[in-house]
Length: 387
Image (cartoon, rainbow, N blue to C red; front, side, top):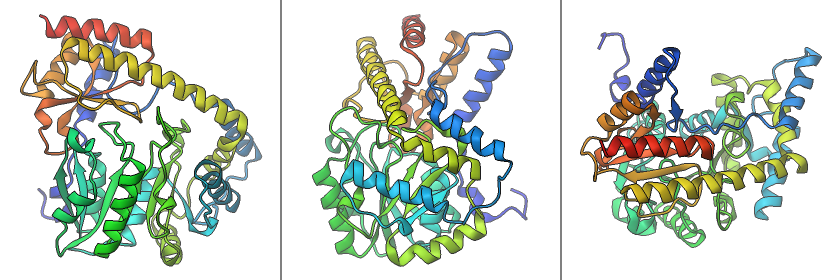
């Protein structure tokens, strides 16, 4: 590395799927038909009510800075949403609007981690979360998890792996890449265990709303001291608008706003006004219909992958991913993904992107394409593995 590049960058890992995405786009430019099952972005458009609100804001021409913590009306709307969805009373002052969930993670870790601290995370997990920790000269303690715990951390694992440097625990439910949930009782006992150990609990609730059975409960139902990260990207379908939020414990309100002032100034104004429309009853009904469609897609993909010989010990309960064991076909999932793209034009994500827990045996399939498109993808995949 160049001598002037910060040492911390040696530990920042790339997102390997971006290499596959770039190649997929090259093949499309050459006229190839590529079915995208690699990126966590469904093929739905921005909901019409949200789009209209964003246009109305832009048409005023008054796209000025907002307060660093966000529009007061939006913070209030988010707090009201917690009351409606979870029966949780939330002070809007604790809600900080951020540029996507990524901005929320930066704030949460920036205001709570010191150099040398460590954060417990399940392995496999979303790779950027580890890199956010590293930015603050802290480290991630990866805990290998499997089907016996639904690929989730629990109170027992937290207690077993806690050490002197451990500052907190991050639990993502539903999880990326596995789509699994931690049960309400498991979430509560995990939070209690972290509290007993004197740490911080970070709850990644980005895929809340995209749950296909009983609704997931927020960590705020069990603790006012949890940091809760959420986003308008997934359930609300606003990926490119780059808007999310962070709920902080009361003691962290001022420092969170202070850090936001310095690293973001504010979340894009038109995105905030657009997000206000996301909570309308009309828009929520559209989102629930999209969730129903995603459930059909999940069932279709899950059943067909099992039929082809992939192992999936835990049926995904949320998000829009299937994390499948491909060891019946390969001992190198990254090469498998590259070859599948070149030979059959199906783009998927290799396990290499999600940690160190047998990544060579796993592929993440995103059911973000329509069932007709996935039908074609399954035909191509079957031809590929039977060649």
